[in-house]
Amino acid sequence: MKEDALHIELGRRYLFAASHRLHSRQLSEEENYRVFGKCNNPYGHGHNYILEVSLSGKIDPATGMIANLADLDAFVTRHVLEEFDHHSLNEDVPAFSDKVPTTENLCIEIFHRLQNFPHAKLERVRIQETGNNSFEYAGKRRKTTRDQANRRDPAE
Image 1 (cartoon, rainbow, N blue to C red):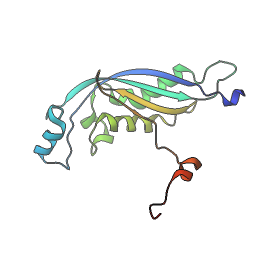
Image 2: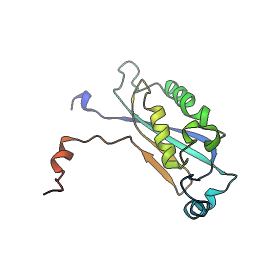
Image 3: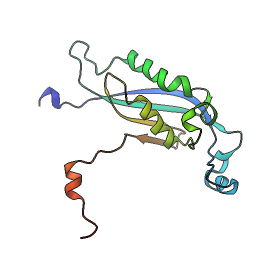
C-alpha cells in the first residue's frame, strides 16, 4: 500500500455552553409550540454541547501528525467557541438571526466556519446536544461517476 493511499483522521473534542430558543417566524405561536414544545420557551434554554471535529490529511514526516493540535485548537476557539460559548445563539450569533438555531443548523454553521482550516481537510462535525441527541454534518456530497451511472432517468 502506498503511503499516499493511507487515509487517517484526526478527531478532536470541544465543549461549549449556549442557549437557544427554537422558534420559527414562519410558523404561528400555536404551530411553534406544537413543533418545538418546551424548546419554544420564550426565555430559551441551554445546553452543554460537545463538538467533535474530524479532519484528514497527510502525515507530516517531520512531526508525525496531520495537524498541530495547538493550531487546530486556536482555529476552533477563534471561529466557533469565542462566538458561541456562553452566548444566546438566537441573540448573539448573526447566522441565526433569521434561522432556527436547531442543532442540525448549528452543525452546518460550524462546518462552514471550520472548513478553511489550512492544515488539514475537514471531514465532518458532530454535535452532541444531550445524552440522547447528536447530529453530524459532512458537507454537501459530491456526485461521483458511480452515482451518475446508477441514476435512472425518470422518463424511462
